[in-house]
Image (cartoon, rainbow, N blue to C red; front, side, top):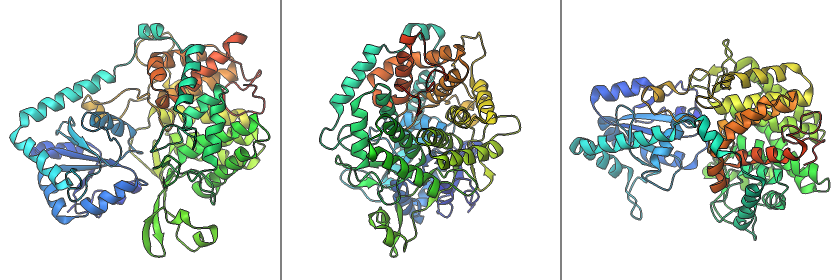
Length: 564
């Protein structure tokens, strides 16, 4: 059996390399093989620190009998959602037609042309409480493929058409008609979030409960007390690792207990910015300063690699006294942890997520007078500039140990890294950072004078496999856990305005955000950064425009000079 995953960049793919399943990695070869054999394709999507991905790998993908069924009747592709976020976005959107319980592992069945016709998430090895086993899912999909092909193709065609419609870019007329949210509308969003607050335990809603850092940044931009209440509740909760610092991904319970113990780079980067902002606004908020220092210590002391880049995440599972456990390591005091092997890091270095860390460390380091944080930000920026920028100026999406992924960089990579370099240039005065950030921003901007297409687009286009099949979703703008590519690029443009005073950048930000105002107002939890940027734009209108850097903070980030 061919072992096609052994040399993968992704640790997640390599963890499946020894499965009896004949996995392919994402690419044309898998679809060509499916067409040759006239069989459906299973696209199985997950990530290295996903607990249920590990469980399904052990229960199903390691089972030789099940693998024989899968190998005989399907072509199987394993995808790391962090390496290929566009692939994940497309098939996650399609999966919404079949299940409301979206998440990972995500298992999508598609035609040899890549068109989805059925999807689900975790399937147990045996039927449980009405949930079919994975073997039953495979048998049912195989039966539909062989006996009801017309129905399968019809479903696939309808879903593909719906995805294509969703990806249509907004026209200039749409932009003009939409407009930004008004101050009154933004205040109404704060009122609605107040009503959604868990007044007993803090945070939003019941369970599962996430930190939703972009929404907290919006609330801070609106000077809403809800932001500090939420941050303070999280700082004192089980979501925060009081030993090593940093925050876990989410809690399975309303009172923040029983977290899912993986720790993500993006959560901790964004929360560092939020706690630093809380510290600047209230010098007596020792809880905020302590939380910020803990996050920075975790990022620099544990997530930052010798090369300078940051690992993308840390696993929830590890062996404690020889027993495999999820979260058991984190239940131990510091002395006992020192006797154990810590949960593994996903050492994959992602350009965009590293950009978030640079921005947070640069802003917080400047605001809280922590030169070590600024030095850490410079180390990762230098690493990315030397290793993640191709000779033609385009970006690398991911690398590991000096090896470069063939995955296309996305708009989030360009936007997050551009904003990071501009912030770092502002904090350090080093022109190289500002100049390179400005170049990256210019590379994704629509040509001056043009009103066609999206305001921001990726040089060279998105994932070529999706694009060749008409499946590429242009400009995914939703942002639950971290900013979308559109909002990240808009953030960079706003930072650039703060540096230059050139109001062209303000126009760019407004045009990028305006088409999404209605969605942001109706679903604020999913559009935190877009709302934050709108709030900052509106806050500057009373003075004749958003403040330039010489007059205030410009980018709306943490700054000792910030007055809002």
